[in-house]
Length: 453
Image (cartoon, rainbow, N blue to C red):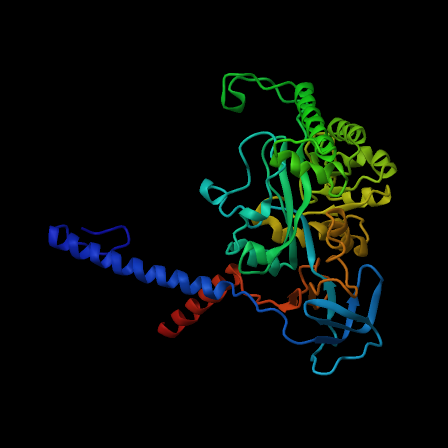
């Protein structure tokens, strides 16, 4: 018979048997090619072995302004000197940075890189845990260091992500992850960066079958009360433990102690005015450090956010209007309006693992709609790092911080500029990713076809 591809196939038993053998051989060849491709797509770099000095570049420190014709030196993965008159240490590898720009590596404050691979394939996603209260879940434990999204994310200049779990009311802990390493242990920068709470939807209706049983969905007030009750139980657990009372260890309540002691913030996913206001009131009652994530209507609550020093992680600046009375530029201009109102904010690339590489463009759109360029850079570097408690390691170029940085032809938020070198903790990264690999593969195909023709 003739297949749709025009290949003739025998239908007798002997032919079928030989066809199966051929398929097996072809499968082995495909598997071998896949392994080779994976090796070419991503190669983990070894730790920094000697001091590196990049000289003559324009250094955008973020924390301390811009240094023209500057030098940055890093050793053992840590920045040791930044300035215009820096002595290059003996034995250092010197990189000529003339005409180049150096920026901190970008930080995505809300991401699923490493815990979600293919959206339509459920088994490739490890984002949501079963149950409503999972503060003991740490995203880092589920990170797949071989994820294809890691390469495409860092090719856009995003070198640190706050990989975040989802599901339930209390979803678990975001983990700060470097986009380089053989295993999740190698990649982990901070295990418990923030506790995530999904604020209840006040507009959701009641329906049968909620939570996998025959019960109705709890009302908005009931869900908020459940949240308050869980925090009260955690507080009682902490008090009993502090008093020396003998108690049964509960991993969920153990994870809450740092939250109640204000060592890590609580990131609340909320978009509407009512939700944001209720979340602020709740956080004040609980005496916890609050961060609002989403913040679609944050501009309408900006005065209260600014007065209480509550930061916002904007998850979308490239979205269209959600309501008929809103202007087309509502999302585009949201960052600029928050800046003008005095609200501290970060910009994220959107939760999807496939969208973290959009982080520079999300911030770039904000520049086009009124946000000063230096504030857009800050929103994806220093602000994001500070909000999530990793500002002592990344987010700016200062001595003592990780040598996690970009060498570019210009502003990395402008898609017309190129990233020429990337370093994570002093490791120079292989910039090959799956997108580039496929580009080179099919360019080679075109070249070969031209030769044949």
